[in-house]
Image 1 (cartoon, rainbow, N blue to C red):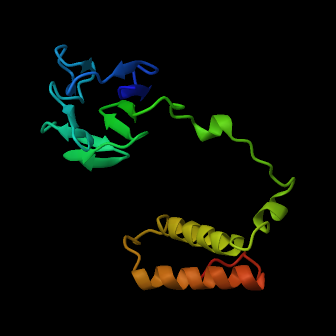
Image 2 (cartoon, one colour; image 1 turned 90 degrees about the horizontal axis):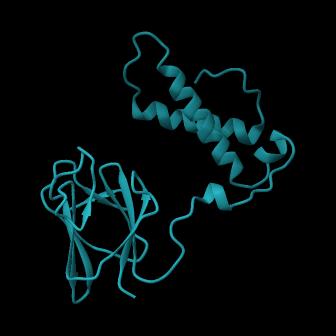
Amino acid sequence: MSPKLTVIAGPADGTTYQIAGDRFSIGRDAQNHFSIPDNSVSREHCVIVRQAEGFLIRDLGSHNGTLVNDLPVKDQLLAHRDCISIGRTVLQFLMRDDVVFEDPAETATTSMPADLNSLLTATPATADLQALLRVSTMLHSFQAIPGTRFLRPEHVGAAFVVAHHRGHTREPRGDSSL
């Protein structure tokens, strides 16, 4: 099978392009193999080039960049199922016939306890997660205090220790002071 690009997000969602030659160009210009009508995409945005070791995507100095798996790239060897973001379009690179990207929320089922308390105590790591949630809540509340612009790193550590300690000792949670 020749590699292909399948659009998984954007105006051409669901469209598949075969990469038949040694060079496959992507950009806003109609002369590209895949033309994306999006002003955030450069006329000649990027190119996929066949090489001995596989297929390489090369950003052509585009203004907004090319992302592979959410990381900006200049030259990147592509792997099966890599996601390429160009403007508001996301493509999936496929080297073989396979299932195209599926949203886990659409395919997964989750069994959850009936009440929140049993959910929060379901696993040993839950105490750490509860402590992080309390720290996050405390940090978020600092934004509401007038004149508080910066939080020193040692306060974050202290907040985690206090929140973690409270999670293990089951102290009342009404007092949020450090």
